[in-house]
Length: 232
Image 1 (tube, helix red, strand yellow):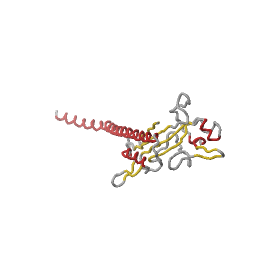
Image 2: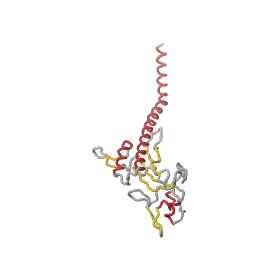
Image 3: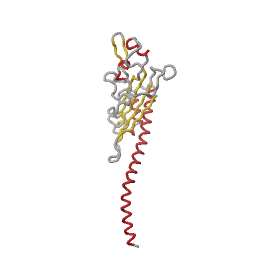
Image 4: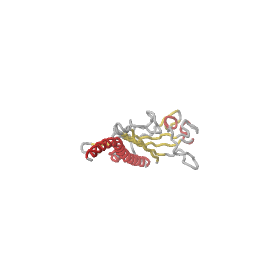
């Protein structure tokens, strides 16, 4: 009987060793996805707060030490959105960290708006959703807007407020978003336009997009990121 028990004990050790090939990856996966889920909730919350502020005309600027950006940095400090001094006080937005928030004001161009372009009811961006303002908070190198993947053309945004600039051509002064197709949104169909029964053109809509870069688990799950967007 003792010999039988010793042999069974050795078999149990081998079985236990093989079982770790199953439960260790499961445990790591559970921990990873649980952490990702918590971070996803945080990303959604910070992005929503930023969008609410933007839609209520909070004066964000492109400066990472702007007071309103500093408030977002405090809200997102656990996500790496803030920089700190030696006493762990928030000193600004982390522009090289793992998170970026993109705030974009958009509108659909009507024939009436086109009158500013050349005095006619037609312009290059007639009937298109276009960017009228954009502020990037955090690490701008991580990601551009999903709906403007090439970014805003150089020289067409105010360097402080992010508002699309105007251009004078002959007798007409008009914003670039009427004339430059590069300011058109790509693949944006969330809001149908109808002047009488739906959402009217030339009405501002505020979009907030948030992205957090995540490292993954080496050897098991590759790195990626958490993305969210919402409209106000």
